[in-house]
Length: 198
Image 1 (cartoon, rainbow, N blue to C red):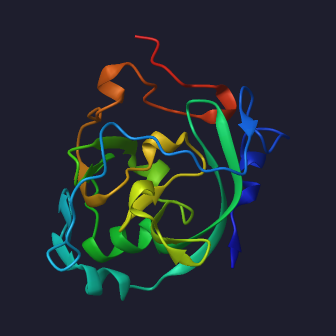
Image 2 (cartoon, rainbow, N blue to C red):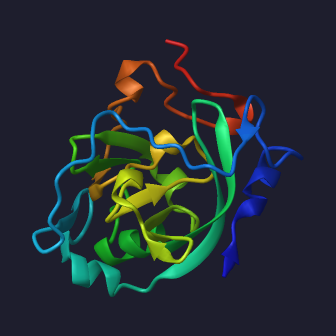
């Protein structure tokens, strides 16, 4: 199992970012309720500035090379949960299969409930940015984003879309749902980048 808890060392000496409190609970937060989903009809798409646009069924996606990582999870509302075991496909695996073009600079994640969130491409091309379908050895609960969500342990968790169903590679930066509503575009927990300065 890969241990991604050393990510904090990039930003300082503390595993718990400033302004956060540690909890063993896993509170549920989303922009709206849990969307209706049908795994048999579920499709994950990869579009935009790529050589090959892709579409995966649920079985095709979960047949991709997967790994289990132990990660910390930091919510922008001020809590952190340590040592979550997430199983799924690293972002670079998807990017390599699609063949990201040289002019791609940004990524937009989309979700079944209409949610979007964005990250620069270089912030996505990390092994710990994971499309995950298992939490602590169990199928990811629907209220935590099952069947599939993104986890981004180096960012606040709103950068990890629940119920994710696609990624678009962009040639120009765009802002996602919360970023358009005043949340930080960069979302670095160790710098407390919770809200936008513009």
